Picture 1 (spheres, rainbow, N blue to C red):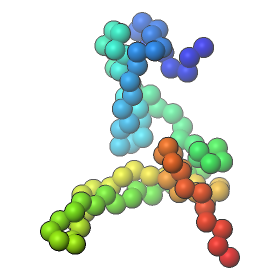
Picture 2: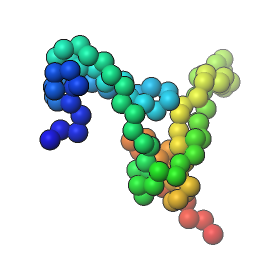
Picture 3: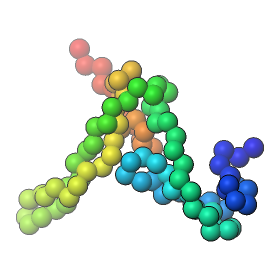
Picture 4: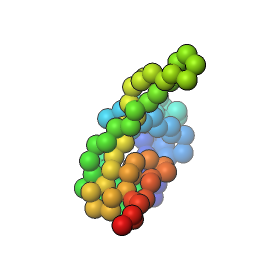
Length: 99
């Protein structure tokens, strides 16, 4: 059984998702046009823990010369359990084991 199906027409293939700043997912069914929001519990992609803390990263844009100006923030989460950072992204960063 597919992980996600349209609640209106049961389509499982012709779907597209857009990540929102709050972490939810807006899913659009291209077969019937239904749009719905999917909330899921955030989990660490490194260890599977749900014990996460919100740690937004700054988003910078290039200004004049070498200057950079703040342009907002990128939502990110760190894991209390394993110490990884940006653990809900496609490329989570494992903790550094510096002693």
